[in-house]
Image (cartoon, rainbow over all chains, first blue to last red; front, top):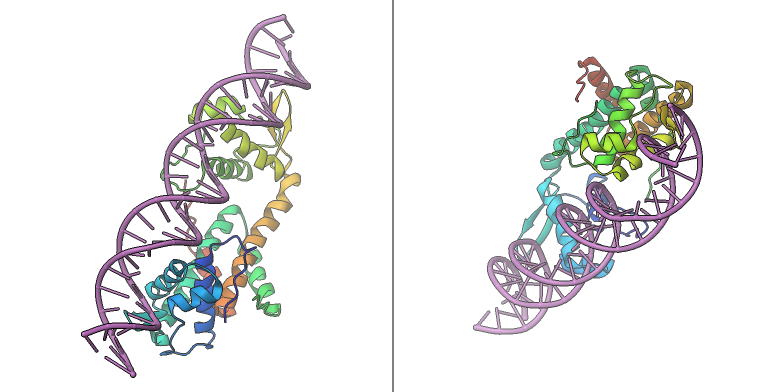
Length: 126
Length: 126
DNA sequence: TCAAGTGTATCGTTTGTGTTAATACACTTA
DNA sequence: TAAGTGTATTAACACAAACGATACACTTGA
């Protein structure tokens, strides 16, 4: 379900968070679906339960999942996270745009960058 | 000439590097101009000479300045760094674009983001 | 009721990074 | 030659992040 990349320098919990978001936003996990338990996934990935718990906490914080103590974690309705997810992406992009603009990149160059990226086939790095 | 922000969580040497790039790209420092000596700037900013040296090493690495041992550091000709600077900005933008695209952001949304950012007055955060 | 499964909280260890410090060396210029 | 310059090395410290071990609290179902 999820494979960790130990060559990746990002923290493990962040990898788990990101890949889980992919599964949710991509539709592989549907609203209401139960996530693997903290302990189970920890064993599967050979990491500490805390690492999984931290990832799940982040997912809950951002509304992707909800937690019922003693029962488990479940995927939220898409209405819970869809708009926040989108505005998060826009915010991420906007921040970098401000940086590169101040660095001297022109609007034309930025627009060209966008078209170029979207013209390319989707990489789907997994 | 340069003021460090200790509330900023980024490392000091990175702040020095960035602000020096601003001075150079912005034209406040002209090609051929002599930079403050490692020791002088260290005293001015009340930091260790190593911190400045690290910043200068990065600037030289990226072609913004050149070093003459025993004499000092000087701003390079803009032809040395202009293209590298631009492609660096494009690369930075491209990387984020790939991320947000995979996150589900559409091309139209990305283009709108660009126009919005460039429509806004330049912040000039210093 | 109680065992098993679940999430939660706390604490300590480890690791990496940034920074400072103290020196020593090599080069250039006046 | 003295003073100023960049460079290199090593050690030490602080701090935050990441991770792990462990104990606690809740829910469910036999």
